[in-house]
Amino acid sequence: MKRKKITALLAGMALMVSLTACGGNAGSQKAGGSGDGAGSSTDAQTQDEQEGGGYSVSELTVNIWDNNQLNGLQEIADEWSETSGVKVRINVITWNEYWTLLEAGASGGEMPDLFWMHINEAEKYMAADMLLNMDDYIAADENIDLSNYYEGITDIYSMNGSQFALPKDHDTIALLYNKAIFEKYDVDVPTDEWDWDDYAAAAAEITEKGAADGVYGTAMNTNDGQDGWYNLIYGFGGEIISDDKKKSGMDNENTLKAMNWLADELFPSMPAQDIMSDTDPDLLFQSGLVGMMLQGSWMVNTFYTAENASDYAWAQIPYYDANGNDVCDEGERVSLYNGLGWAAAKNTKDPQAAYDLAAAFCSKEGQMRQAELGVTMSAYKGCSDAFTSAFEGMDLTPFLSVEESGVLIQHPYSRYTTRWEGMFTTDLVNAWKDPETMTDVCTSVAGQMNEILAEE
Image (tube, rainbow, N blue to C red; front, side, top):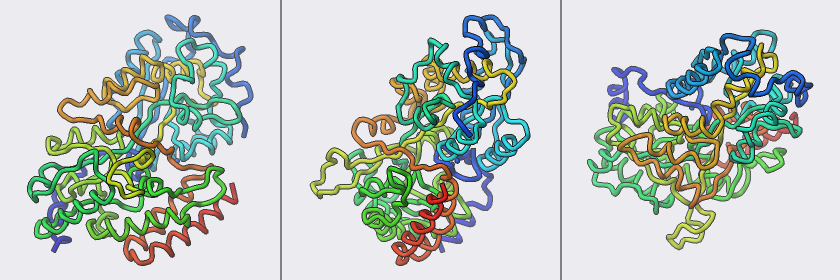
């Protein structure tokens, strides 16, 4: 019955959700050396020399994958163009096509002048010597001091002591819920005091009371890593990958505990896996068929501009009550975090212009503008408060509160992250369909992941 209701409700809907990929959701905007002098002081013109023009190009091409961020970024770019005299053309490309085109450009085609770099892909491009070494440009720029940015984000785009991208943003995870669904079924709405058992209980209650309407308590697919089950794993004390990036953590005792809890406590309150595979959980939520889910701060604009946005609200991500005292003690609330970088092609026609545009996005002023325009939270420390004020009528403080009350865990990665994350998406489907196999599936995935890591 529920499957028929979902099909009927979704059949007439256009593709209304613009998904982002800070966490790398497929199909959306939902992964050599340290330079050989491309950024040397002999080639790099100083910022003062560039005032009023002097660049060798009249236009820069910029590639991104999130249409939600286009207007704000274009506004910042246009402001830079007014003083630099260089036009900026920003292209929005879907997540999968983005990396296909970038790889093709790196293999002999033409790369964009400036583009987003992601934790999943950064090591590969840095090691292949395809990105502009920004060291000397940074040294000559009084507006850029890397100590002002979140250290973890800066480090993602550094190799052998050199910097290959400027930190663009950072993100955290919160609980998104539909107030109308909770009210309709008389279920207490989420609070910042919720632990994971509270989350599971509310999801089960909504699923039971909403059965006749085809409504589920929650949703989380296999590809919902950073904004999904990764948070459970680290919250329960497990890990995806070892700190030295040499061993999988998918067979870790606490990882298996978290994944089996997910299977036992949340799967019964979710749509069937094949439904979530055909229709992304984000769209199911916006269709009024899911009561709550985890979401990343990079997705705020999608829900803020949705048809039923007035029904949507946020709470802090639940915590794992490890000692059972019904209090969120230090270390029990965990959120994954990540951050993109602005990288330039090593062979860009005007390295100084490309760097200066990146610096315009990443300077304190640019980061404040980014936050004020509601583009994303900032990579520059202390600039993200403006982001929570950019969406009138929607309280976004849970995204910042978790930085004070919780533990932030960097999105797990290695040189070839996409290989083993892609395996998660496909191989874990078996456990989603047959929860009793979760331990065996995760153990098998760990073995395959170890083989990939051994090749790195």
